[in-house]
Length: 397
Ligand SMILES: *[C@@H]1O[C@H](CO)[C@@H](O)[C@H](O)[C@H]1NC(C)=O
Ligand SMILES: *[C@@H]1O[C@H](CO)[C@@H](O)[C@H](O)[C@H]1NC(C)=O
Ligand SMILES: *[C@@H]1O[C@H](CO)[C@@H](O)[C@H](O)[C@H]1NC(C)=O
Ligand SMILES: *[C@@H]1O[C@H](CO)[C@@H](O)[C@H](O)[C@H]1NC(C)=O
Image 1 (tube, rainbow, N blue to C red):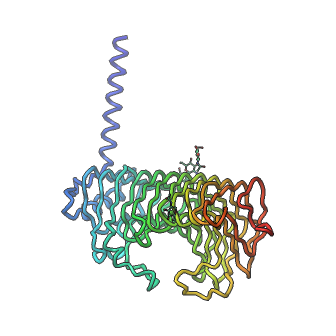
Image 2 (image 1 turned 45 degrees about the vertical axis):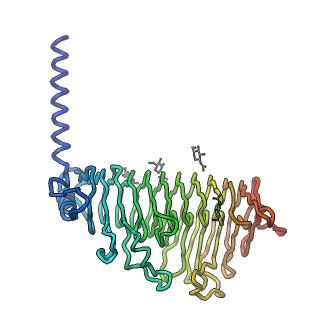
Image 3 (image 1 turned 90 degrees about the horizontal axis):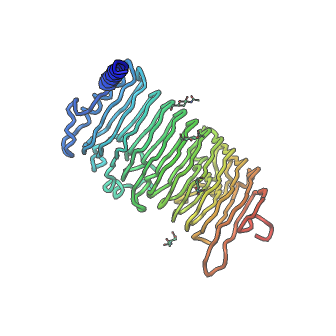
């Protein structure tokens, strides 16, 4: 028995040693590459070099950004890599506050299969100066400001437990990705920060956002054209502009949006709840198979909204109907309070009325001098079931 225990002990130690050696062998600590983490020295080079080596490693590897403050300019985590790579961010990364010191994105992950980003770290965009010089609304051009975190062409990847603070423009921009999960994400910027969308997804398939707390100055989660099989769940929004599909129909050659589920989310004090917006006078487009279900609204200004006459700053031909076709949309189990009297607004295109809109189990309360909540509908005949308040698109509503 003594011998057995000893043998087991030796085996255990051997195992442990092997494990440790393997983990160390595949760890790329940015401090070993010269990162100072003192909040002053530019650590970009060290981090970019650690990534290059990790990405070229033959076995799975980890870039470690341990606790500390790292001042960094543009970071490029670019593949293809030889094996899966994890970027474990435990520290706080800070962008230069002056937007002129960044050309495009601040931190970009690109063209990687099997990427994991984890560690509970913080990406601080230090956006205050950028917001004060932002004139996108006037010029329509926002390209000169950097996104905090850009994810392009990632496949089979997972981004979990990271925080994005005070981005200069979008916090997280997901483009051309396939099968990527974003789990337990935190996003934080003030209500009045311009164009700081929380998570924007475009031209991607199988993106799963599960668990996020998003406080920001623009859309909480927004989906652009070409999104398919997108799942958004357990997201808490507010302040901000809510969860949005679109705007669609602004450009030619937009790809269809098909298969979106937004479920089990809570929105508080946002400008909109769940919405689909398309431009008038648009090229043709498609948004179909969209489900909004189990959503709590707390003092939300436009809790349920389809707006096919979306025309901010009046720079469009508002009289010409949108040619984006909206079909198979379900609003189910949406409850709470509206900050405006019109709690449900479904205004579809005169040229292409919405088809197969389902409205089920809605309870949106408004307490104002004007009376209780109402709905407003155009070019849509939804199928209503369960208890729906306010009465939606009935002839008397
Ligand atoms: C999606 O990616 C995960 C890794 O994050 C992987 O385990 C899973 O098999 C992938 N699914 C498909 C359908 O490729
Ligand atoms: C999204 O990810 C969560 C957590 O991994 C998982 O439980 C859920 O099934 C996923 N949803 C979809 C639609 O892939
Ligand atoms: C989300 O799901 C959890 C667990 O089922 C539940 O406790 C919570 O009330 C749900 N929230 C919403 C907004 O539906
Ligand atoms: C409700 O929303 C309105 C409009 O956004 C806002 O003015 C008001 O302060 C909010 N009320 C509460 C109790 O947060």
